[in-house]
Length: 152
Length: 239
Image (cartoon, helix red, strand yellow):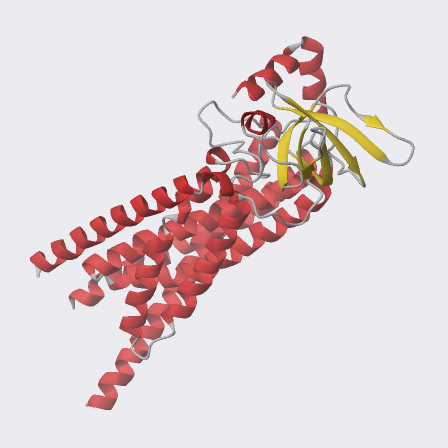
């Protein structure tokens, strides 16, 4: 009886190890397709032909947002290393603002501009009351903190 | 007699614990809700919508916690054939499925105004949806066999196979680019959430955990009673 219990335990542990190993291999090989979006650096490193639909994510560059009269919005997305110009026509989510994360779905035009058909806001993991964010900005901690976030 | 020794002891401990859990839940639920809905400040960016977090995060934590519980209980049931472990795993499954559904729905309601979409197929959202299907599969597989013992064994194996999904859910936001934000609380460099919002959240987490304990004990007692009736009927019919 004891022996059979041990046998079952060994079987279970070995089974779980094999299963986790197989899962890890599958996930590692699917790395690219599981990622929800590409970063501007990845885009720069890899030649993506125009017309292929994909998502690009990063921070909206401060001062880059231009709203044209016909409702077209132009802005640049950065991961602090590379920048990609984006053009979009449509409604933007509430959280869309300069310095904030966005994920855009679309394709590259011939001139390297990303033509977006959908723009989603990406919220970061910072939660704080308005007074705290104001106080941080006043004390000059804000930029450092954001910078540290981006560096990771 | 050995078969019943442990369930009997469980009954005694459960009977002693139940009133305390119930009282703690009655006291903490209004406190937690007051903290979350009134005392906690609105977020600097999301405003009042951030309050969805006080339901979403505890529900999502319970969704994965309950599954871990089922996986451990299933392993014990498979290796040591412990009847109480089987009962615990089975009793927990619908509760975990419900909390997964709550996490998915509240997340979707938050996502529409904040992200601009109800749903995306990013690694976090997809892995939690898979968790929901695993719960449903576990419940269905349990009842899919004529012989309840075989159903329990098949479901236990499914629960263990599905357990590889748990680390994927937890680390999906670190391993891959996702739309879902990374963890704000359980992270190496400390929480990135203001204390005035963290405390209400932790109270709500405790409330949800107590609720799970309460429902789990009640459901396990019910299933043990059902088993006893079943056994009495069987022995009555035989003799």
